[in-house]
Image (tube, rainbow, N blue to C red; front, side, top):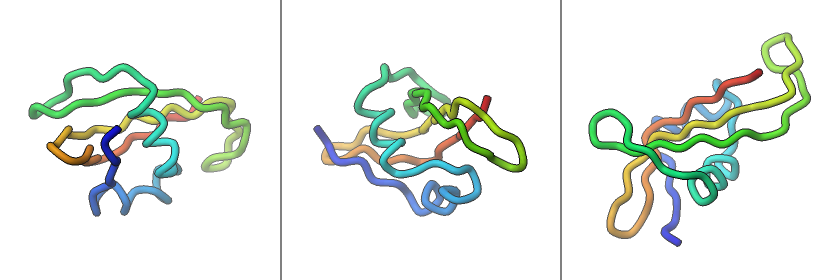
Length: 84
């Protein structure tokens, strides 16, 4: 497997959107990839959450990384997190 690297942009959103690098890596390695805008790729993975986020308790967190597959690595451009 190619290593996964988060861009500076993706890293800057870790705390704001509430995801971890491990969750992103797990989603990329274990979920089907789909085409995204601008020739990029995306995938989605749900994680059990059961905690508070922004004042409300959510049972599930969905991680959606947007990335490109390069010759020697997978570069994550940004990551979206959804809570429900």
